[in-house]
Length: 402
Image (cartoon, rainbow, N blue to C red; front, side, top):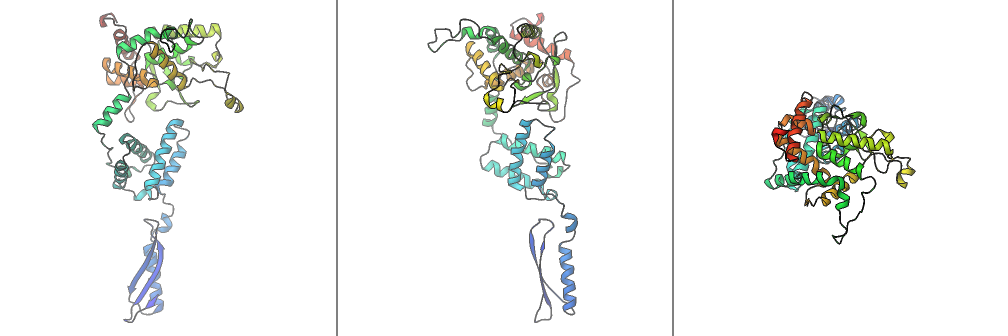
């Protein structure tokens, strides 16, 4: 506090801005009767500058709120989803994590998206981060931060790339795969392209073929098929109940609410699964007692590393599914090119059902939904009719015979 030559007082002080949380300096020139009056005015100005500070100390910054939200989701989302959320959360924290949650405006979010795009990040990656922030905003009742924020438009090149990455098999290729699958090892040739690799079917091939055929006829995610149990399978009714999935050996619920569903199966697949179960029980394959439809070929024979941890391998891995599909693809003489082997069968069934059923039925089979839509009211009979038309096309029968 300083008295100036003109009789006024210069009042100075520091305070924490309740809006930004940063330190600010008070510097005012005022008229006062004396030093005591000037001190009183200074105290009043500081109080006004920090008005509501006591109530605002509990204001959360975005980074803190994101961490708390992510911790609350651990038990309700799949580990893979948690990993994806964690990556997005770290990106948002690095960009605007120091902002107070109630001070963030949609333009702040738009600015971050534009900055990421300018740094040549993939549009789908950026939009994925935005989807996570929208989920956070909805869960924490802070919709104001993303109000009116639109996803970045994709370029034609990106759309075509995404389409290429998700391409499935053609009908002819699928037909070849289904015909060759049961005896694929016998058709695989050595490097000289003349000598068969196998003279008889390898042990366990029936198990492998049952898994791949199920993926081909249902469009299930490999992790959903691996977590399928016999009490989820009603062969008489021809229905599968998809109630769980797995990620790196951890069983949990499917990746989204719409993924928890009932799926009709074609008679051809029902017959194959019935034979698969009878063989399992008769030969007492490793893992039969687990109740899993497709227990890991290494069930009861974990690696040394897993054995030291006391872990028992019982779930079929994506690696096993992918390698098996690749062998069958090779035996069928199919060139996948850039198409992903692991999900090519899911994409194939997705495309076929799209051509022969309504969008609602397709989503009920594949396990897709927009936002909070679910399709539990879609009758199994509608799915069965769709699969009947798909089967007729794959098996090259007239639709009137289906």
